[in-house]
Length: 58
Image 1 (cartoon, rainbow, N blue to C red):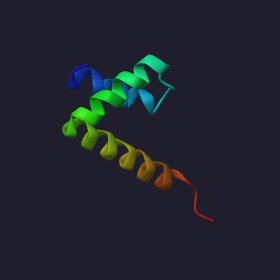
Image 2: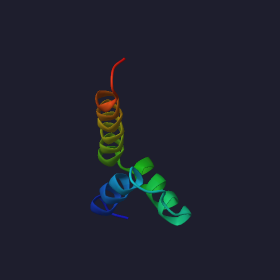
Image 3: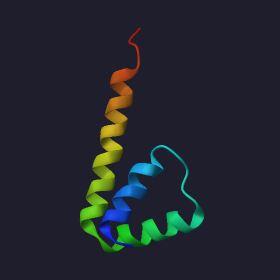
Image 4: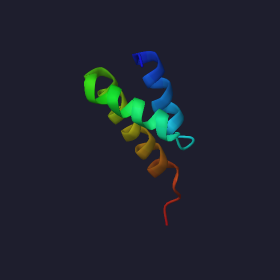
């Protein structure tokens, strides 16, 4: 897997569950590539912040 595929899978994993094969390939790539690992953490953080902002306040 290259970085382009990894970033696509990272983005897709936020919208749909990845297959077992996709998930394993992505995990291996993230273990080996600190750039994509950083991207994955940043994407998860942005999604979390966005979800918190979109929740109505009581």
